[in-house]
Length: 321
Ligand SMILES: [Zn+2]
Image (cartoon, rainbow, N blue to C red):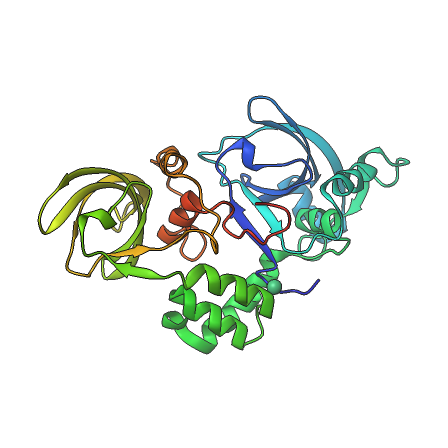
C-alpha cells in the first residue's frame, strides 16, 4: 500500500449503523484524537474498542522516558453529535475485518508481554497501532496528509486547493495521490450539473449548487413550498454561514431557486452513482440539522450533500457499498 492520502481516508459518521466490527475509528478526546479498532458492537450506541491508550501525562512522560502504552479494551458510549466520529476507509485492506479484530485482540490477550506497546507520540502512537491492525504497517494518516497538503499549499496557493476538481488534479500532478484515487475523485467531483430552467427540475431529495457568499455552495432540497413562474421556493438543508464569529451550522433554510440558469442540479444517479432513495436522503439530511462540525475540504457543504445522497461517499472503498 502506498502513502497516498486518498487510499486511506477519514469519513465522518453520524450513526451507530455506519460502524462495523473491525473498523478503524477515530473520535475526539480531551487532548488529542483517539484511534481504535472496533471489537464488537453493543446495543444503544455502545462499542467495545481496542486502543493503544495513554493519558496525556503518559504521552508527555513517554516522549522523555519511552513509556510503554497499554493496549486495552474498553466499552464506550458514543455521542455522534459532539464527538466528531470518523471511520477510516481503506481502499486496500490486506486483512479482513475479522482478522483485524483478531490482530488487535492478540495484543490484549497475548502472553502478558504483548499487551505492552512502545508508545511514541510521533512514530508509534495510537493511530499507528490501529493502522498496524488493519494493514500490517504502522503509519499516521494525519502526519502524512499534513506534510503533503502543506507542500501542495506552498506550491499552488489557496486558490489552487479550494476547488475540489482542481485540487484533485494538482494532487495527482504532484504525485500526492495515486492514479486510482485520482480517477475515483474525478468521477465524484466532475458530476454533470444542469442549469435549472423549470419547476420540474427542483425536486425533493435533489442536490443543487448555487453561489453563496461568492463561493459555490451545495444544498439538499427537503421540501417544496410553492411554485411560481420565475422560481420555486423550497426548503433546503445546508451548512449555513452564521456570521464570522459563529460556527457554521447545518440548518433548514428557505431558498428561492430562480430559472435563470444560476442554480444548477447535480446529476447524481445510476449507473455511475449509487444513491439513496428520496425519503432516505431527506432523513439523512434532517438527522444532521444543528450540526456544527464544518471543516473546509473535509466536511463542508459539498461533503454534507454527497453524504446525504450517495451510498458511501466512495463506493469503491473496501467493501462499503
Ligand atoms: Zn490512492
